[in-house]
Length: 100
Image 1 (tube, rainbow, N blue to C red):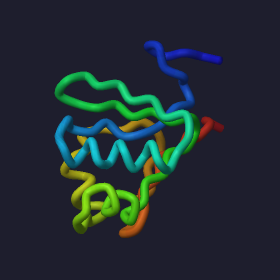
Image 2: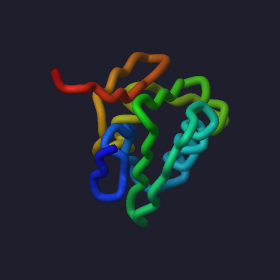
Image 3: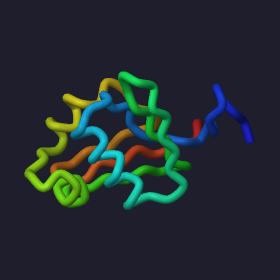
Image 4: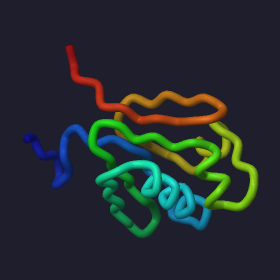
């Protein structure tokens, strides 16, 4: 396995601003995915999941207790991400894509 800066090369996921809403997103990611690693860097949270990370609007809203609009509300909290991202109004996913 190839390692990059202490993390598995095939891990994917968002980098989120460190705030209450982002922590709710992290909680939803942890409930929805397995083997989640979160690096708290003070001003931001780096979330890493092997190969594929999925986050649904419903899971976010269950954590927040209020409406959350994808993709707009997520984009305002996510300055970066790792992987190939796909967003709809109901779900966002980050996937590892093996180069051809």
